[in-house]
Every structure is written in structure tokens, then in C-alpha cells.
Image (tube, rainbow, N blue to C red; front, side, top):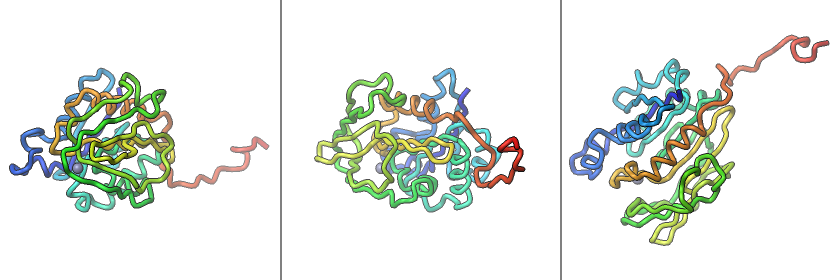
Length: 243
Ligand code: ZN
């Protein structure tokens, strides 16, 4: 069983003037948990900013295989020590999936070490997502491309380190192109960034988007994990050479 923890700041959906409140009345985290929980090999718990101190602890992260992160307007309210713990657990081996505006979240920026900036516009563009790495596990079961009738436009340059693999390239009717699905390895952990998911569109109800996130959870699940990557072990000579 792959143990998934879905974090969502859960702010836009509580604002009655925001379209997110009618699209995701129970929050984006509940929508993501609902489709992930349909998979027999995945079990999901959720946490929001309101209970982040009790919902993201060292103990909970040690019992999490993959964390999924959605944040936007409240990145600054995520405590620094929690961002540091998430970063460390990824280095230890936990998988991490950052969705949409998670590109500016504290844990993602710590893991990338770069600006993670991009250009953006809200103008109801259609997005066409091209599968640029059809052999990648995250792309399995998807068509050559799929479209979202409305999304927030993100564009290059995207201030990330060169990805290990770019699985999706997004094109928008406004003309922009964007590296919409990227993977990295950090320490023992696998990291995936996936761009669609603006709160005012029903993106997480799209079957192809759901497929990408399910595939990404399975891909990011740890294959090797240690307790503390920050340690520098000092073994006796015989331990490493046998002489
Ligand atoms: Zn957005």
C-alpha cells in the first residue's frame, strides 16, 4: 500500500466570491484524495494549513511514502521548520509531487535551490498538454496529448534546475509554452512538478489529470529510504574494506 499525504492550504475554496468554492466545496485536497483512494494500492490522508502543525510531523512524514502539495496564496504561512522537515524526508527517500502554484512553495524552492519563477496570466486559455516522454512511467495510459478547456497560463522561462526528465510540455492558446511536467531526484527521493490545477477550473476532475497524478504517486513511491540523510556516518575501517 502506498501511503499518500495530501497537503492543501485550503484558502481559496473557503472564499464565497471565488469560483473554487463551488468547484471544490470540500477543498482541492478532498477532490485529490477521492480519486486517489479509488486505487487499490493507494491510501490517502489529508492535511490543511489550519492543522499543519499536527498534520505534518516528523512521525507522520516517516510514515508517508509520497506527499502531494497544493499551495498558492499562503506559502508564507507554512512554518519554516515544516518546510525543512519535508525537504529532509525527501532527501531520505520520501516522494513529493508539487501541483500548480506549488512551484513557489517553501519545500519545492528548498529542493530546487533556484527562483522557481515563471510568467503567468489568467485569461481562460485552453491548454494542450503534449506527452514529451511517452516511455516515462508517469505518461503511461495517456494519449499523445490532451486538452484542458480552461487553465491559468504559465510560461517560460521557468526558473528551475534542468529537469532529469520533462514528461509534459504545455501549450496555451495565448501562445505560451511551458515545461508542465518535470522530474528530479533529490537525495534518495523522487520529485515531480505538474503545472495544471488553478483553483477556478475543475482541473482535478479531468480523467487525464487524475491519471497523471495516480501514475506520479506510483513512480514517486520510495525504492530506498534512510532515517537521516544529514548524518555523516563514521564506520570502522573493517566495516568498509574488510582488511
Ligand atoms: Zn493558479
